[in-house]
Image (tube, rainbow, N blue to C red):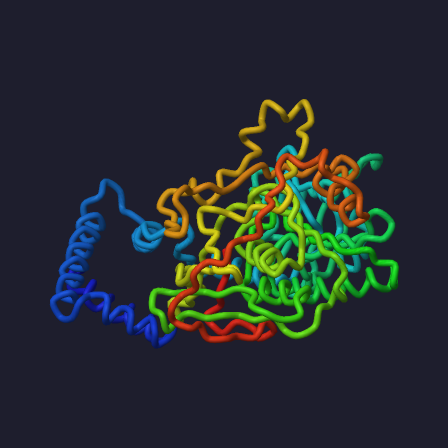
Length: 474
């Protein structure tokens, strides 16, 4: 079959895949072309693609990988739309599902690469690795007898993951132990801890959310329960740390926001067609019992983090401390491609805070702008530690609510909490102390109420899981 004719068939198959993903996608395809003449123009372009593909396939200097050519063409089409639309082959789609699910079959260790071998940052409590005696600082030099040196970190991690119940042998080099030794570990279900918590300042609950996956809301519920158990009625307030949190699932961002709100809108989304607009409201009941809340954000806080920050700021439920957030105000829908495997990540909507703000290429401005003091050895790298934000990404969606685009800021956070200026300011604020000396700038005005979409969005409860295909705010 000539490839040009095959391209026509391929377009019809693709249309069928879109229809299976949802009726409104099929309507978009039908109306976008402008009728039969528009469709004919599209088919002629597909013929052109078929001709080029056929020529590359037959005449290129070496035999090309045809599957990679098709993937590159699909990716080129999607990446031309905006920086966040892309194609995921079956392997990448599976990895994305693991990230959003927040659980997988594995060992339970946080790792990094150090001089060509895998270094254990820390074993996760109550996981196979922790029970087997793996320690922070251990070097993994072999996995099932295969040397780690020469592998990338992702390749090494992939080898350590596997089916629950399957054994794995890792060879460990430990400081203070003369010879390497083997440790046999049985893989189990590992849940990614997206929420960590502690007590700060003696009476303040500190909750760090690193991403928004399916484990986030359960992790937040556990954190609040533990803090209340330890402090009882002595809880002065809560600090929600969203710094350098890149985002994640839209429904989790809505649920986390609702945890601290008793009522009202959390976020609204507006798609290409007015009928696609939706409004998500908070569930009744503030799990923090009305206690004061401070949210920490910086240039690395994006997407789902900005939804939470914007909702709590607009409802005056929390004070925001830190620096301007990343400025990503769009929602991506993950659309599986059926039997062919893989999926596309497609930007399908913009989101708006309760006051009607679009933060696209603008970001969330904290109520108190406080910048971290860089240590001397990092001061010459200050520019590298500053995120450029959504506005710097080539092909990003424009924001018609603003005249000047500006987003991103410093993303540096000290490991030593005693030297963390933003965290210390939050503690002082909740204790009623004056933080004016720490503030670079106070944003005095509350966000202005901006014009809503004329079409009334459909209400959605915050606690309802997102429908398939799954929507991500990142």
